[in-house]
Image 1 (cartoon, helix red, strand yellow):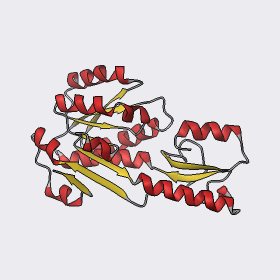
Image 2 (tube, one colour):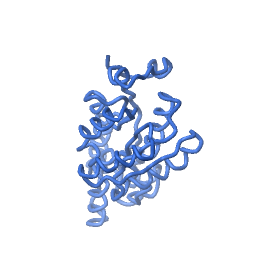
Image 3 (tube, helix red, strand yellow):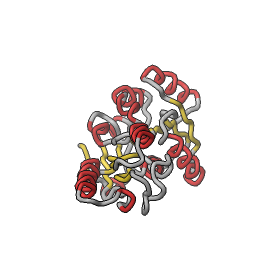
Image 4 (cartoon, one colour):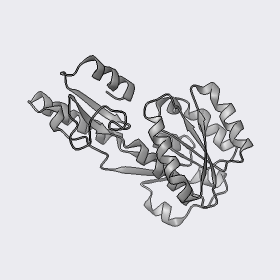
Length: 232
């Protein structure tokens, strides 16, 4: 299962057939498993740790552009993983000296109004929570951000390669491989309840220097040296 709603539907359908999650956002918070160490029941797999990653993206945005104080947050709030990310961002924002303006995005038609609202609130930065609808509309989001000269941290490296400023993400390929190993173990007799939820072993920071130049930004050298990939 690669999405939270799909995993929830599968769990409602059976409490005996093993279910292996592939890179789900927050399996504990959404009630799919009891804990990371002991999942319980028939569900196990990989977690993307999306609340923690959302916070890290906000921290990276502040590190990249210290003057930022008002951040537009795009989120698909109907998705089960969105509220946990927004709550995590709300907790950390005051310590970063940042005010958040959360806009609910249900479709691409909502983006123009969200960015217009951001302009009205004088936002000076942008992040997104990690729902698939926002990935689908990446091109529009990148275009709006560039037009309004908003520094942004995205979910996936492909978004940076398509013109975004920065991305911070888990290594999805590694999580898929780990999920396949769990399937193999279950087929050989292991119980899902005995297989702890695995979290990303490697996280990747990608920076687009061309986008930074377009925005008139000089990113800190300390940030550039930590990047796993810098696009010239």
